[in-house]
Image (cartoon, rainbow, N blue to C red; front, top):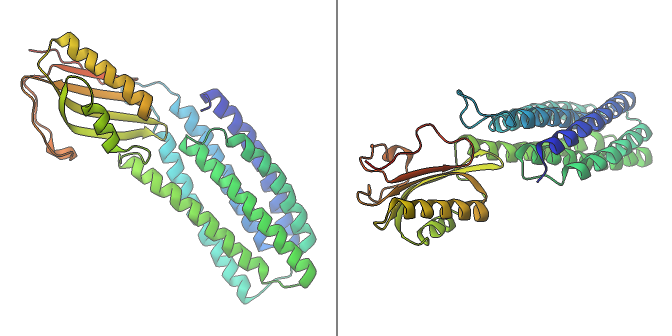
Length: 321
């Protein structure tokens, strides 16, 4: 996983090169009258937007926590990815409309210009994709890579379309390929929307198996039960967990050792860096469902609460009464 500085440097270079691709394909599309090439330029425009948003999101996520954002600004990256996907959907609608219009009234296309412009785009985007592929754990980096690799595939299709027009003069290949590119963009947009909505709803991250997390916790020495388990994502690469664990009656020191051991193992096995573990012993609150609204009563006797990761919530440590 790259550092924040590495991510920003990679995104800066990718953004500059993608802007170059946009200029080349836009000029080529206008000169050749190719909707397919203009559609690909539209896809590249979304790449520019995605890379710019990813750059902004990475910089914002690195801001320290403050009084108004106690967990920092990690979720800016999720909002940026969602906005990016909405723009993609708008591009899809525009391409689809123009493609249907050209199917009804085909326009002449200069196949040679189409091929040259698309080949330039393929070369530059391939270089950009190799730079982005080393850090796909972050949602915005992965979304940016998805844009670029999708554009490579679309550009290959544009080259084929240009060759077909040169060899056969069949103009319908241009709007038909444009519709295929629109479907490609729509598929990528849907995947991003689905993942970002799950994160915004604080759904369980897809890589987390709650049954495995439960087994890890209940298999800990001195732990006799657990409830109120929640795992959610602060961002695409920052996860948090809260849980109540019931331990055998033991001194406070031993209970704290249990918490520290759990923190370490949850981080090592599941990459959960923010944990809040509430330990109950003499007065456990009992087994309850995991619904957020079903466990809101205060506790009269709380033995240990521990927060691992940055920053801890205010008042997260409550000594025994």
